[in-house]
Length: 346
Image (cartoon, rainbow, N blue to C red):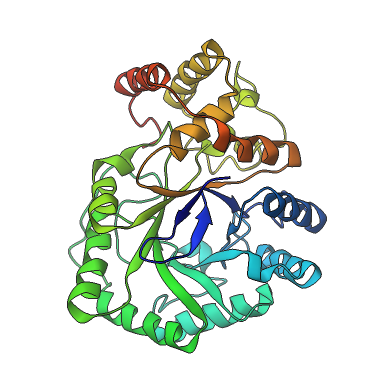
């Protein structure tokens, strides 16, 4: 395994992070425990969860992911060996069962942290993230930004940082980060951290893969110049960047088949682009999944690559991607496909 420092800290996290959002829907508790055992034994010391999980969100399963991680911590005694990241939900009709309003108010943050700690059976979270912005902006697959003049949201970056600082001082969280955020939001948080001597957002968790590289258009420069690390999620595009979806296959238990409402990776242009990337992997004798993950692993702005799996075999293959290094010829061929079909999921 390879490791990188969480930006602005001396904490080393594995370049592969275990994503857990399938725990509680696609994975049973026993399977979740098996995955965590294997990941930790193979050098993965960074786990990511959220109060929302598992996904897709619904009241009857909300928090199950946390509870499975918590039962593993209790059974294994491995809490001190894991750097644990979690997230508080932003606003949205689909999360009203968690919180209807005041998503990033101090009271809402306190409620989120305390309930997460209880489910996780721990007394601290290493990295606490805002799952998505409160304001209207283009995320979750929206290609362009549409401004709303009479938006109910009022700028509250300083207030949020002050609230988070109080929970850092209490010891309940150690560091803070963002998720599904755009350049303007990242820079506003960084501005207040710098000018008001408030805690810094050290990471941003956004989608990034061969099929979705819009992070490079603005956020990547911020990461490099401001020392913020990308925690890349969906690096396999819901499995689209694996062998199992080639030749028009739609496996019965795949995420694309199980959750058709999460279909951003099922468009004709995504299928066409993934076939071209698959052909590159075949040409060079590589596992398609490993090539796709290695592409993300090698990016200098990536702090850690969040992988998720529904089987132990998938998990083994994903973790082993750290041992694959893409040469200049492969990268040149990848760039040619990207030039032909850029960001087909946007």
